[in-house]
Structures are given as structure tokens and as C-alpha cells.
Image 1 (cartoon, rainbow, N blue to C red):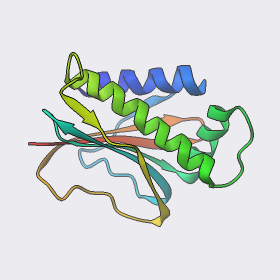
Image 2 (cartoon, helix red, strand yellow):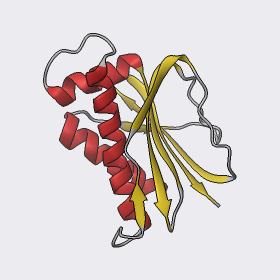
Image 3 (cartoon, rainbow, N blue to C red):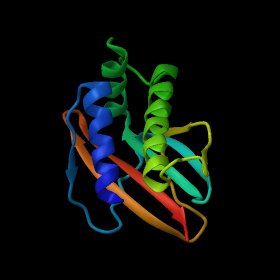
Image 4 (tube, rainbow, N blue to C red):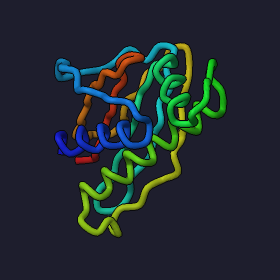
Length: 149
């Protein structure tokens, strides 16, 4: 699962954003401090229930959005929120196909974003957690998948 999520993220960043990303080793908790960050979140329901999130520091989110839109974005705005939501959506679609051959037995929610000066992100349910840190030129970010046990 982990390797397929890494492949998926690399493909999305390479093809959609023209950015190369590499996995960064981290301890098991892997948590990034969510300070001046934005998270794109998408829910999964059906045979697999859970949440996929991509967590990006604002500086990385702005750089990603600039690349995504092909124009300079200089501050957090609705374009950044939309781009991060779309990234979560693309990753969620790929995770859906990883978890289910045909994908018909898993539904995805609309993406939402959470942004702020400092916040925590955690599940209130028992969940299997896959947490992957990545590095790109503007900085580090993470992809997190929580699946109910």
C-alpha cells in the first residue's frame, strides 16, 4: 500500500505540477508540525472507510499552486485552497483504485481544506495509519491515510 501511494504521489506531482518529489525517512509517528499549514482532506466510505489527507506548509502549498496554475501565486487564497483540495481529490482517487480493483464499492467525499497558524490533525477512531513524508524543492509535506480497522 505504502509503495503504491508513493508512486501515485510522485506521478501526480510529476505530471500535473512538473515537480519532482522524494520520500523522506521519518520515525513511525512521522507527524509534521502543522504550523502555518494547509491540509486537503478527502473521506472514503464503503468497503473501506477512512480519510486521506495531504498536509503542506503554506510556502509549499503556494509553490505547488503556482506550478499547478502556471502563474505566480504569492499568498494563501482561495486558489491555494482549491489546488490543495484538488491534490487531495487526485490522491484519493488513486487510493480508491489501490484499495478496490473496480472502485465501485468505495465512495469519495468532496475535498475539504483546513488551514491555520497551528492545528492538530488526528482521527478519533481506531485506524491503520500510513504516513509518508515527502521533500520537494520548496520544502517538506506529508500524505496521510487513515483506514478504520
